[in-house]
Amino acid sequence: MGYFENLNIDNYNLDTDGEVRYIDGALRFVPWLEGIEDTIYKGCVEDLLALDWTGYKLYLVGGLLEGWKTTDIDICITGDIGDNLSTLMEDATKLGPFDVYYVKSLDEIKGNANRIWEFAKHTDRRGVRAPRWHGQWKSDGLFWMTEKFNDKGRTYTKEPLALN
Image 1 (cartoon, one colour):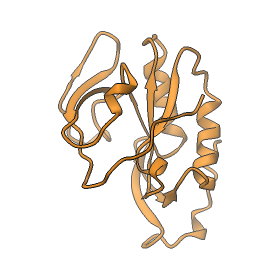
Image 2 (cartoon, rainbow, N blue to C red):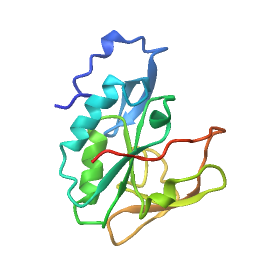
Image 3 (cartoon, rainbow, N blue to C red):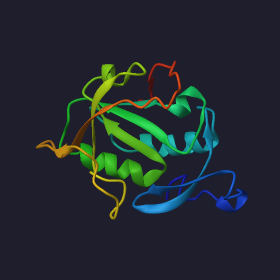
Image 4 (cartoon, helix red, strand yellow):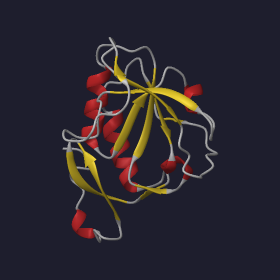
């Protein structure tokens, strides 16, 4: 069992200390995470890096990197797509509140408003009963989407942080 699976949620007020999110196909309470010194973040990333990411680079991006309160850990993956990438991405999402996606280049994720980006996930929806996202499965085994980046009125200032 990983760090997140062993997290004792009895220590949290479920109404004010986080949000309920889909993790590994089920709804789970996720405490607020804030910044890269967050204990939960550190434990989850340690589990993530224990997977065999040979040939891939992992980067922390998004709100947690900026130091904002969030309930997910945004992970961007680059490298040549191998047969194991979809499985690795699925395994990662089982370890904690990870939002993992693949991009061909880090340039895809840099910048703020008015950015169109192409990215891929290992699945085509958030949960079994959830509606399918707009995109398409490709022969590499990943579900590819092209979207306008939603900065939610925030300004992102941090460069992606290499994790491995």
